[in-house]
Image (cartoon, rainbow, N blue to C red; front, side, top):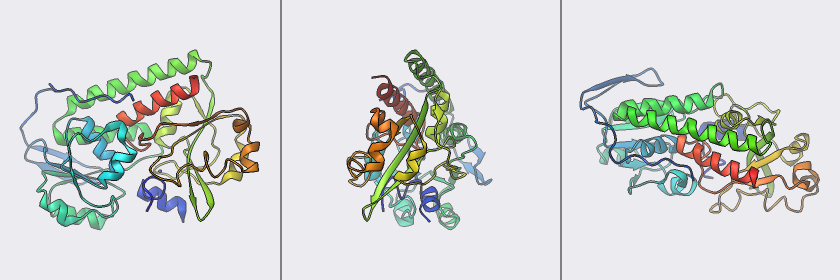
Length: 324
């Protein structure tokens, strides 16, 4: 299975195919509470913890990023190698146990870690979540929400912070995130790019067929772009969770003169059709943004479904690409 384009986010990929400025956790973070914690997660379940969770397992990369950003090094992570390749903007600071894939974590491996808490997303099958609840308390966060992508990301951060006793750290992360967006918006405006149209996408190749995945305004990246003063050029409707759509190279002909930005990964040979397979394609070469040189590949390792750290890294990379 592909790491970004076919397996992550798992729910969105299934639907569409039938998804540098990182702030480091402070060493002297705020005083921690040792009192018991009761909270309600995204599934509506009431979760009781004896105190702030320390030994935490993350079944999806976005929650792992939140944990690391909050200063909580997870003891178990789904697909560690994949995380290290796709989310190096917020690097792991320890050597967590690999608990299997994000879609099918190993219950035995997780149980062997004796975690205080397991953090999962709504993408994980309910039956799997129920199995996990037999191992340790589980906090489920909503994977994404195209109606308010940035707000949902921050809501997930707050819920995980509540479970780990790091709410003050979360407040700092949100403040830094807002500051980074304001800085990026000003830089783009100073460069005459306020209101500029942007089309963000990723792509992949299967059996010599190029597929393109547009990130509409309902995607997390789309939400960040709008906060940066940019206008989403995609006219396609994305899915209700991740705001992702599907098209092909012919579907790009309606974009017009835009800034075309995409992400790929050097570790995945099929993840960069824009820079490889389409190089000699007549339709691709005829596109206005290709002719004008307004095609930008961002740095590897920025997870487009991550947290504040990834979105800060994205902002830095985007501004640098558009203003150079």
